[in-house]
Image (cartoon, rainbow, N blue to C red; front, side, top):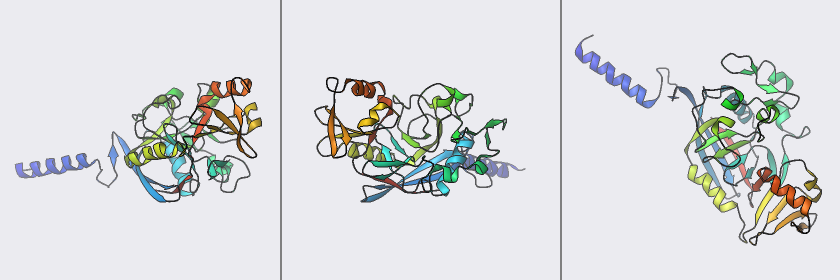
Length: 297
């Protein structure tokens, strides 16, 4: 090869590497193939906001395949943003203005179990050995594809990240408890405490500010009231799963006629203590409905 051809080849190769693509057109970053993903949010029925992500296929391949499969089946379409308390979560609930129903119930039309069936989960594995079962138990929970569960190699942190939610805790059942709830995170929080504790699928390419705006604009209503959903089975549910904290810091439980039952250390000590002890299970419901319009790849 003459000197001119060598230089031309070097420049061409460098250009390909800079673009992060392979010869066959695949996008590659940090040693992983990339899948482009766009999540379209219907914000309050007024506007549609597109948030673009890059999914790192090699870092959590089983989890990403699970998410892509559900999204292409339309599972996420019409689900609501259920939490705007420092991060944004979607994928478990549908409904309007905080009156949510879970898609994890067995009898829900187009719910989780309509798509994640016994025939689908059969033979699905994760990990380089291909021997770790991806779906566990009768509820088809997803095995935790992260270092705390012995699966290493994911280089992504929690800044501007797309994450599969699981129950918080270190027990095997909690680590392997994820289903379909997704979170958009902007760093570590009391819940999403470390990247090695959750399956991080990808990163935001554009639209991070729009997601943050959902949190600032929809976390409180015009009177300063904040709304919560208690997403854990407990005796507290005898007063309803929904709670509201007003601008004076007073807490109310939702009854048949609205948020009328005051919850305090004096009047409802047991319930008040239960709420404080399990504050990680309180999800900050947006006061207006934000839905997933569609997810595309």
